Amino acid sequence: MQRLRLKFGRGAPVRFISHLDSIRCWERVFRRASIPVAYTQGFSPHPRITVAAPLAVGITSDAELMDIWLRKWMPPESAMMLVRRELPSGFTLLETMEVPEGAPALQASVRTACYRCTAVHPGGFEGARSAVEAFLRSESAVHVFARGEETREVDLRPLVYALSAEAGDAGSCLVDMEVSIGQEGSARPDHVLTVLGFSMPVASIIRTALTFEWPDDAATGTKLRR
Image (tube, rainbow, N blue to C red; front, side, top):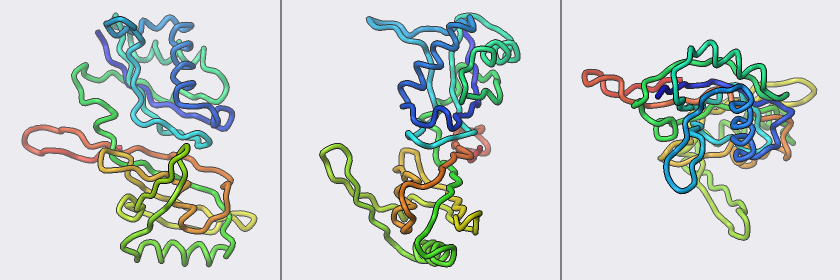
């Protein structure tokens, strides 16, 4: 058994497909590329594929991570070459590496996500900057939103670790943020932008990095890594 870690991107052509459809797409790609993906045991076997953090519909990324388990060993470079030949438009395979089979799970180790957003604020850049400064000074920033037939609320302030804005082109603003998406809670970038007063829908949201925390060794404990 071999475990490979793939770093990949999802571009504009596929930004509106769901996480489940994305996984199904990768399953077809691996099948067409003759990658010997291992299957789970049990009544309904499925390919052993895990993604660090599902990407919300409408968001693009160049920082996604996926682990796959193979039935037999193959060079990571060969796997990358074969997969790249079968990728549909909108997906890019950036890197492939081998990791220990018993390494910590991606989903349990992910802690934060970084996003770059292009959006328009009714108050222009000065209004956006004032909103960001007020958010960072606040102790609480509750956002109320609908999820299905339910109404939910979340305090975004403790879930946002970094936030900044700069002037963009044609009256837009570039907003960078680092938010929690781990077991301590998650913040959606569009929710943060809504609380800041940006007009919806925004022009674009790109996930630029994921940060993980996992065991390093017995002497040094844990470290955050991207």
